Length: 347
Image (cartoon, rainbow, N blue to C red; front, side, top):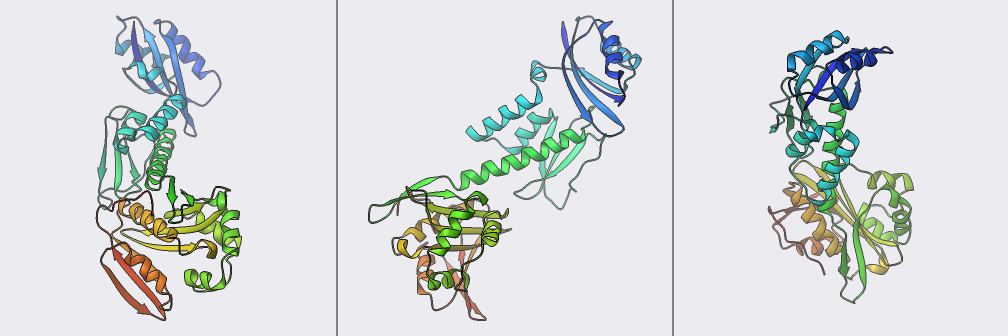
């Protein structure tokens, strides 16, 4: 017996798949796996069939055509093709969390592609058209990922699947940039630094309400508490990270944000008054700087009022080259990041 993969276009009408199955049964061919891609006017069916070894590729094609199929593509299949796609996708996602591989390797496995290569963004346009054997996807880190699979065109379902895989890869990489870390403060107290998201809006808003007007003004330039909606948007920003400091009782007592724009990023840190002067801001800044460097950021900007000496002291603590500019009463300090900045587990 031999395994074959069949991709065929069928009219989206009742009974067409049954007609195809009847013709394949005459070979005889046993259908072991089936995946349906809905494209609009018709459907694209992926089948894995088991046939006697003497059955030729041309005989399979003829049976598919007699069963009402159009534009059949038939090729030798491997046992991996018997794994249903949801299971396969979950397996790849799990592997990516435990032992990340390059996104090109992941996409090639997911799509059964002949090759997936990275190209500079200005050389290839992203997109896909049904019936093509090439698809191009934007790489979150810049450039374009180009997948090719000769002889078997991609479907809209596969394009959506590939986009989801790229998004997942980006999430895994982002999470690894800001791992959950327990930090020991100079007085022996412990806080957990972890990435914050929109689900932390209420806790972060409460932390803002515990801050003095002076602390708020030092962070935002105004001494009023932002509303929940503004904080929700801040925590949900897709072009950066939010790193919170959480106590053992679940309260968030400090928040650092990193907003990335290409090779530059802006950092901001707010520590509630009761937790200030305990080097908590230093721990947050260092981890955000490490995450920025891993994301390809070369310049890190911080903006504050010239009357706030603590902010400059904080940035100087990175021991990296800095430059300063004063515009309309706002002092901007720019830190030049190296390619690799060492992290620290304690402060």
